[in-house]
Amino acid sequence: MNKIFKLANSIYIIERRIFMKDILNNLNIFLSNLNDFYRKLQNFRWNIKGRNFFTVHSKLEEFYNELNEKIDEIAEHILSLEGQPLGTLKDYLETASITEAKNDKVDSSYIFKELIKDYSTLLQDVKNIKKMADNNSETKTSVLMDEFIEDYTKKIWMLKYSIDN
Image (cartoon, rainbow, N blue to C red; front, side, top):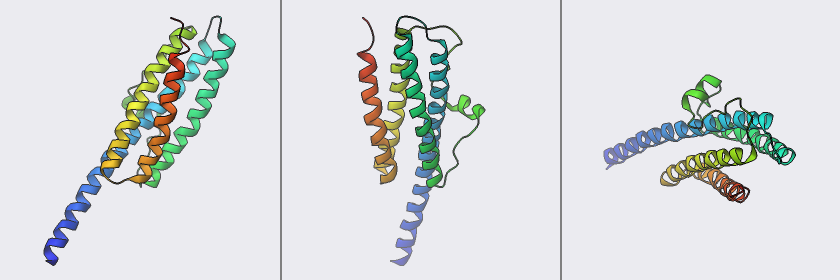
């Protein structure tokens, strides 16, 4: 019976290591997307033009200041799981699925459509991480992802209602 217990325990440890590697990889992809999105928000803020300039200019600053805190939160969460957060622009660009903004003047309608797309990408990231965490009883990660899901769902809804049709 002792041999069976040791074997089962060894299997559990191996499975847990595989899961932790996967969850840390997904958290780093999310971290990369957050960092790329942060730069994109700043770029849009610097290049907004049009009738909603003042309102959108301020809102973009609010978004990227908030995002800066979330970047730190995710990096520290990765560290709390004994992982190593990605930390170079090269890493982010190689890992992120969010595309960079061009250095072009853009109006609020274009920005809102891009933000909806990018927040949807981030929402999918956190839903995938939450599912992995739930399937492996990683409560701390799951609860953290709940906060992001609520935030991104609301932002997407608000941005959709801000677009002129």
